[in-house]
Image (cartoon, rainbow, N blue to C red; front, side, top):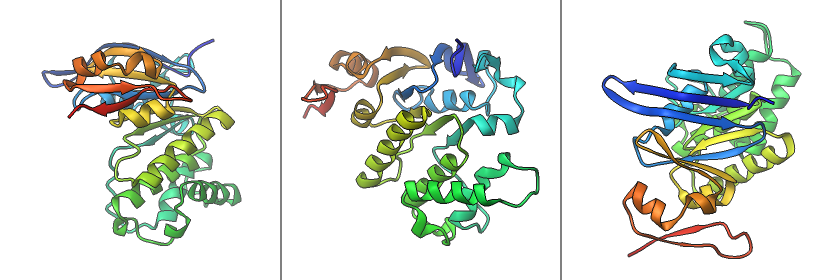
Length: 258
């Protein structure tokens, strides 16, 4: 059985700077994976390659087929993306932005139908953005806009969700709400989730598998308790921490040493 997403011997560089160096990774259907690493370790670039936005040397396969064999329309029905930042320069309301996600579900230039409107409403309810529906996106706060982008991705009803720093700009309540929603969709719909993250404690709490990048290579790949050790964090991040595993979950919790 082929993986939902698979990369093999990925090489990618921006000019002379190599960002990914022979990265190989298999993501099974229904997995929930957090991608960690310091700034510049290749997290965002890896997500862009997984979504087909960037092309790299090496193999990228989606359900066993080369990703370049898919049209953009086909990819948008399978993969939804929440980017780190979304620049919107035109006057659209939040509801209009979310509805744009439905474009791949109907003919070009066709009007949205009842199923599209229902998907948009459900995704906005799930992300606590219903009250923002009629507001201009360019007038929203960073956190409000981020939640709208997550609602848009959910409205695609894709099989795979790629998220680049989804907790950026969100307050604590909405951080926990978004990750709890991802976990629920993962369990109920077998949604495959891959998220690039900076917060190690959120990653340990919500993601059963973590991939830690360092200088464009995979340094560790495994369960949170295998990846987030004091020695590994010291090696990769260059900081001294204390790692505890409190009951009942026994997931690691990281404390910065004063």
